[in-house]
Image (tube, rainbow, N blue to C red):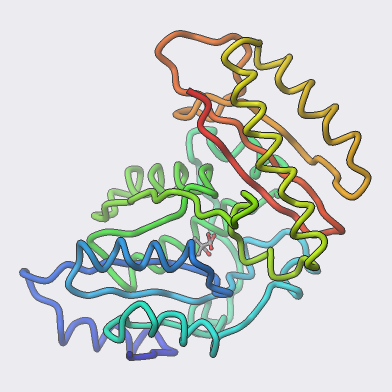
Length: 282
Ligand code: PAF
């Protein structure tokens, strides 16, 4: 397994091994890897001859200094996990300076309104930071295929919009959510939960699964009211938002329209740790 800490070294290595017959698969991450990330790597390995994973906690996508400071950093353990998938994976773990070259600021992006909903509304500037780093990483790695988890479904749609607007020649692939046995969506932030909180956080998936069943019979407003009521009963959890939205536009569903695909999105705080999840509704 090769580890590069600077873009210069990575680019020079990739230039030396790639040609018109090779295909580069890329998995961008912020580390604290879990089975969900490893499944993205496995998907990448199936379809590409060169496989790269980046591990970089991107400061510009955090709108909360405490969240950034507490974001788990577990590079050695991450490397062991990557090796357990394959020894042939290339790891790119740059420093903030190497990526931002002294100007740790985001570029502003217009994603045709996708950025104004949910995560974008509650984490101002978040998707400018995501766009900045993803575009930068795509320019460095020049992947043919890039793999993103559907847990961050809004991010996935935004990255697809970014590559189409900027005509970046990469195929963006969405991969299914990985869940703990109790249903909790796997996330690097789960590392910060106590065992007890982790157990109790099963309520998130349980509630959105109930919401999915209800949505077959009730309106989006009735389903939303149900979820809000459920979380009011939970003293350890604070619901930040629950939104049923059109999968393509991410606009809230006011009235169900035949033929449209809907998805529920949720963000919940457990003892200041913010967890998100999503489920397809039809
Ligand atoms: O989903 C993440 O882990 C991050 O938002 C990403 C795509 C690696 C950009 O920093």
